[in-house]
Picture 1 (cartoon, rainbow, N blue to C red):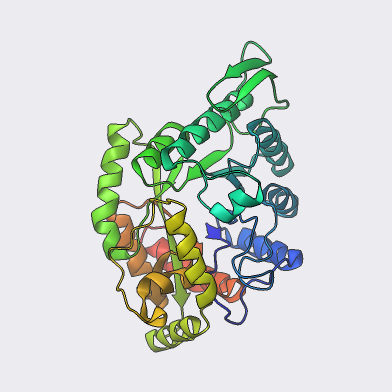
Picture 2: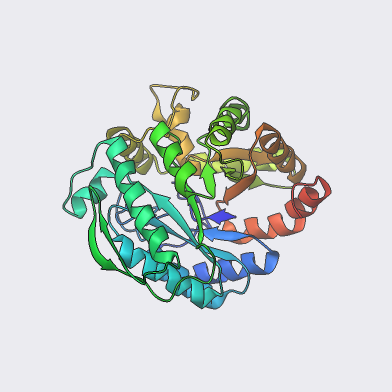
Length: 356
């Protein structure tokens, strides 16, 4: 799978802001290459202005509908910040896109933490676990709206939602509904995933970090009766023909890093009580340009894989060995990066048994 998070950098050939034609072309290329899914980030507000990374962000449900009509096989996800979208509206939109796509819709459900966006919508950020209590009610309603029940409508009286005669027709093409992923790794976030998700993203900062974090996450999921839950990692791939070229390109990306946006994003995460991020294993420095906890945002917080195609696949193998069952890929230059994945990385992955 690929994600729109190319990172907070100003390098050449990154995705243009608000350019639908480019997004559609990349999705169609990924579709031709057999990429399994396309996942957007969801931002309602940029970090440092409209002409900087993430400054112009398409709304993800209508984005998904457009790409569903323009592709043939790839799974198209919408990322939903559940505090801002009513579950009846979300269930109907996802069922609509599922029909447009012939059963290729997916949902990335996020409980939220981005305080400036809450304020833009005129609400305060709830306490961390309360956000997941709201998300649990939200997802419970969506699941019931997708289900075929004896009664065509139902009432719901919870702590956050009070619905009378709730209904949504037609039902999704997929049964029991579109694939659901989430990324909350706190105890509350894990419980949400164990109850509602097909995929949970592991909060890991490196291949080595996965070796200690992922087995425990697998243990927790299995203990909750979710042996079927996929554990995925987000990886940021910089692949070149030689290791020297890859390292030089990494240096270029870091030189082009958007430090202003990265510093603001770290501040927002820390003040938004986002517990999925751990800063302990990053090398700290008084100089922001040497602080690994800042530089990680240049790759959108994803696991770095840098080197030749063989080195990339070796890193993917180590992630699988630690218990990771799937990856979501972030790239700097998606056009060139997708070509390298198709021509160089996918064949090696198939040889290694990492890809069918």
